[in-house]
Length: 355
Ligand SMILES: *Cc1c(COP(=O)(O)O)cnc(C)c1O
Image 1: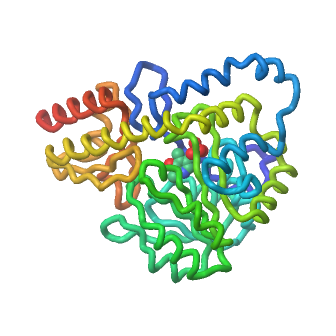
Image 2: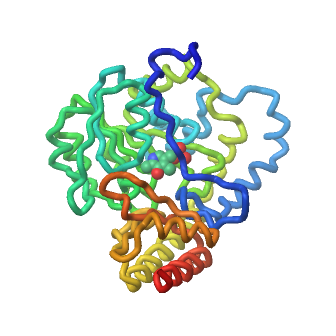
């Protein structure tokens, strides 16, 4: 830390993403990305000569073409869409726009680790609401608290989701506080709460193209909220970084959204592979939560999760282990291609039989 660091960042808590090592070729099942390429329409957009020739000019800071494409996909109006460099940036803008130092927020004790990092970095007053014993969201506790709530639905790393009625109940219970609903994995669950935004002005739904749209490398996220909240987000963005999305990034996003059949196909394959892999793990004696996402969360009574992770790594397979309370004996495994999962299951079987 240099002597010039602003005091308000003395507590900054950098998030640690899944590792991206380059020392050898790995089967990457550690960051919930995909090794499947995005829609071929994305390739077409990148090869468009007009994109190349226009790079000398700033892109539209209002991001209207991309917001219009997102709006059409989500059944809302462009004025109800805010876009950013990944949902991480969108969440960061939400924190800066609606919360101030000391603002009271809460999130589950087991959830996306970034929420705690944002809350710490922005000096919020945060509290963890424990998940129930079975890792289900404690809907009652979230209804009772008057803190702003950050909720991933489906949740990570558990993969579990709650129904739309429960989210509506949480939003209705305390309409003066915000409910930020992170739907990074909604496409793998067949359910979204976007349409609840019209009747709940305290609800902000955040989605990403990093997971279900096979575009982690392009990093595009968006928030859906009522028009005046989106306008607030844009005001903060324009006073900070008006050109947050590059022209190539926006062209990639628009192209991907123009091909729903493609991503529906890759999502359907992922869901089939997920359910088959879950069954195979259960047949080996693992407890595996019923995932509504593109990853599995698994535990074995006779194999420590940290050892499982380490021994998989030695065979060239990366997974994600969290040495955190309640979940340090569980492993999060991204659902890869059927081939990748075949190798993962084969190596897991070997690890189990050769202690
Ligand atoms: C992956 C993930 C994100 C971040 O997505 P980006 O759009 O790539 O920044 C946000 N929330 C959750 C729960 C995630 O798993």
